[in-house]
Image 1 (tube, one colour):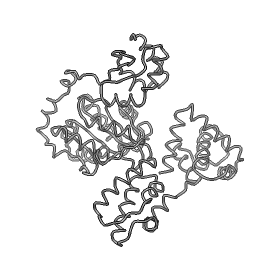
Image 2 (cartoon, helix red, strand yellow):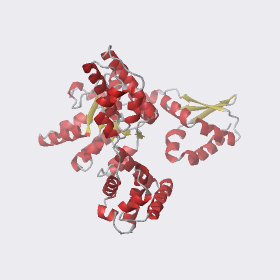
Image 3 (spheres, helix red, strand yellow):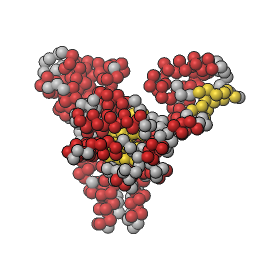
Image 4 (tube, one colour):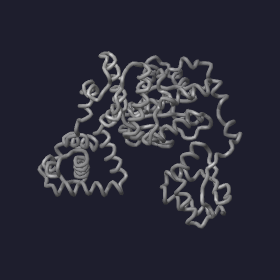
Length: 451
């Protein structure tokens, strides 16, 4: 197969997988040979080889066959490392700045010894985030910078960041790894301003090899802190240093965050940790239960308890883990077997909270806040687009997240007819497929309401 054939196939793949996926995963592929029906592609990293093989191999093969290429199978092999990228790493510069500040003096937050890759339970919702974090922790030339992890509360962002720090320090003890929250970054910045030690502040933060900032949404709206964060970010990227950021939402959805910072954060790999599914929650519970069984060796544990908890507590992994810890502690103190009856007795408050239903009124308030309109306009008679569209979004969410009928929803929106609600729901369903902003808004609001 000639390279011009592969060039035509790449153009078709661009239309098939989309511009972002093409730039990240298809463009770097290099066709090296076709041998005995096997098309062999060269890729820069093992992470990319695994990801492309799992997610795009079938699509690539389909397009190759459509182009009459003599390929019945595709393989992805990591290209041999060249000496130049390794020598381009600014190691001498990093070594030269270690002297003023010892690693132990870095103004970071302590790492939790429990948060390692070995203790992280991987499932479909967090598979990409885990793989990307592993790749960054392996070290070597920076592949994607920054790595931006985002998702709701208790989905594993902080765990992965601690795991990256642990693994990086184990593999490369000489590297200066700094982990801290955005709040701590702001506190250090304000303290440096107050004490007139900005030169020391800049030297510390711009001399690290790996910078990890948790909950970056906290600096939104704080102009001076954003300014310093922006310059620190640029300085480290220019030096080829790795940056890992986490937040509770995607960069473009963080309100009051400067556009230039959003742009910088979006230039790397942005990974969403999706809400956990039943299988992942059950896997987490099984892992934790094994640890607790070692801690409470004489405790009896009935079948079906873990499955019950994985089904009932679905929004927050921290709540799930806390419930299991409370259950084991309670059973050991009272000397009883952990049964379903004991579980319901011990965790009555958590189970009741997990059964909380979303109301139409909550939806209206949340949508009004998101679109910055008055609640009275949401349920009022105005039909201008800036109000009608958010109203339709609220109607759609009310239909999806509550058990209310269309007439009941209409009554809560100023006594509107059920056909008006039906039209609003259908309109949002149509727009979700054509308007990415509407689709993102609906998904973010749904997560916020279900959290």
